[in-house]
Image 1 (cartoon, rainbow, N blue to C red):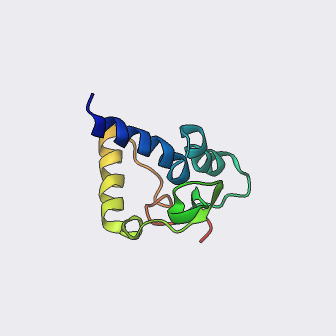
Image 2 (image 1 turned 30 degrees about the vertical axis):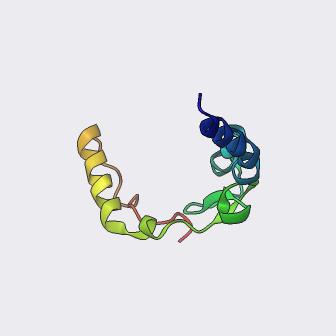
Image 3 (image 1 turned 135 degrees about the horizontal axis):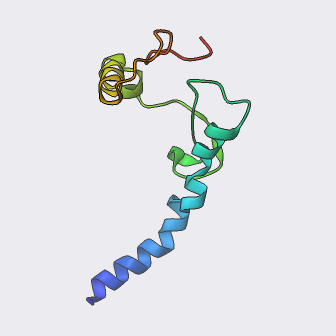
Amino acid sequence: MSHSSALTRTAFAAIRPLLLQSPERGALPVLRAATDPDVRGGEYYGPRGFQQSKGFPKVVRSSPQSYDTSPQRRLWALSEDMTNIEFPSGAQPGRHLHE
């Protein structure tokens, strides 16, 4: 093992807790979205810390790409084709439950 790789690993190990969170903490936004009875359809959850890199979950704005309905509709149609299931017309991509 070279000195530089050992130094890099040591430095990253020291900095990692400041920038990132554990897998358990990383799962909290998904768990909150799935289990919190106050969550509304269309809400996104992420860490509340700096740059949403760590912290307890809060409602966050999703990426601009998530608002593009064209790929949503393609995925919806592909899902129906692959599963041989036609979903009700009221359940459409880009439509939030609280609208």
